Length: 259
Image 1: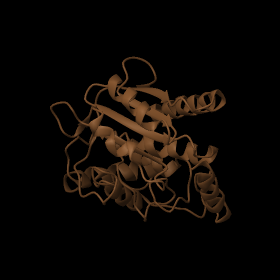
Image 2 (image 1 turned 135 degrees about the horizontal axis):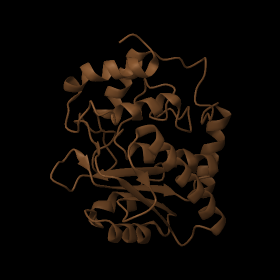
Image 3 (image 1 turned 135 degrees about the vertical axis):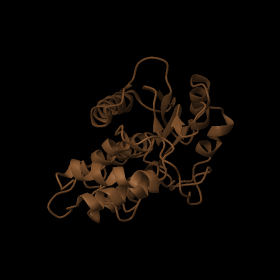
Image 4 (image 1 turned 45 degrees about the horizontal axis):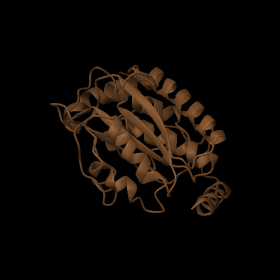
């Protein structure tokens, strides 16, 4: 698995993919494009419940309570990688907090588990995650334990409170076999998707929410999507049609276009 994923990263970089620059003059976007991308990414699901078939339309979903992340490493993860990944996850959590304005930290009782594990110890590590977070069962994590080899990472968010559109728990799984950049790319995409940007769109650029893997790390465009998601003018449960008048205004405000 480690050899296979190293070959994947090498092949992508040779093709000019996994960019780390966040976009530039070659990737302009307007407020209308931003609003359209937000609709595709925030109001549709990427997968069905088994991370297999395509998901369908969805109301807006996000967190209302503070997010408390915790990292769980499989026994096979060496100390050097644990140190690197912990540093990267902490720095990225701080960035997500700044961008969204939503409380996110790595303290307190965890409700967002970040599992970094190998093919050999993933099931055991997932069992530890399920035992740590209310509203998550081992059965609900079965799809993670049986991930296909071409799934480098994944995330699922759960709404176990009274509102099915308000997240109360999440689990992200990162394969430790991923080489450094691919692993960091997984951290960026899965943690951001776990906040409520649940879909990918082939039209989104520059963006990590696109299956073409052109960009490895969260871009300025993606930061604006997250700002839109947590704008107080939008509410969990809104449909794309209900949110459209607000998203157009918000997108124009964020891009400096006419309101």
